[in-house]
Amino acid sequence: MTEAESRNYEIITENFNGKDIDFIKKDEKVLITARAIARGLEISKDNVNQIYRNHKNLLERHIGEMKIISPQGTRQITRVFDKTAFIWIAVRSNSPKAIPFQEWTIKVIDDVVNKGLYIERQPEFGSTDWALQTVEVMKSLLLNQKHQEERLKKLEEKDRYIFVIPRTKRKLQDEVHRIAIEYFNGDHSKVWNPLKAHFHVSRYEEFKEEDAQTILKGFVREHPPKFIQKIKENNQNHNVLPSKKEKRGLDALWDMETERKEIYEHENKEV
Image (tube, rainbow, N blue to C red; front, side, top):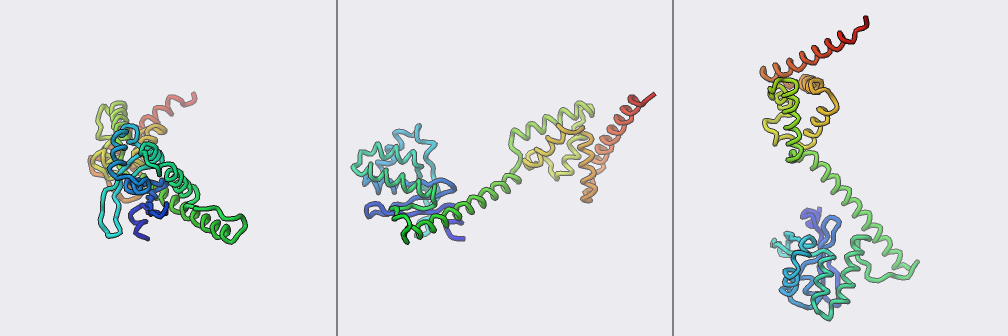
């Protein structure tokens, strides 16, 4: 893994009129710093930041801050601009370099996003340079696709293990309360204890989002005692023994389900 990969961004340096301009590629975005904008426009960094401050309300969602590691290894917080914010700054800079630098920067950003690398000039079709450039573009696109797939996979794995979000937590609390009132005379422990034992939590905040969603689906699609009985079976299969208090709750759930089943069969028995 390269240093750029470990820090989750890549610095791309291109040349504009003899000046090195750094771009930052992070995920699927290509950003540019205030320092790079000032260098290309031949204005001061303070002027760039002043234009930003004058139009902060409009540009706020197009600008962010990143921790950048310098070649010397020092870390610094750097303000970064997306393409929309850059164009806004360039147009209002009153710099004679604004139009050529703006056109060049837009091409760099678009090429890197769409092709994986900046193509300074288009060689003659079928020439050796054209073939080599095509190979480089394909390699870059494949590499970008691989990085994107890895990123999505990491996000999916992360999502499976994040703790329950507030909205899901409230839904789960409401469902436990409803079932306790409806079936167990308000005794929340008969619903809560089996869930707590199975998912190894002591508070609602400790549920994982995925587990909380599974519980809610079970409450909606199945009779609650039947769902709790599944938890009991899973506990037994994994040798997870409930406490005496939890066992009483589980047994009460099972007894109620059995009783309801017997009543149903008796009422529907053919004469």
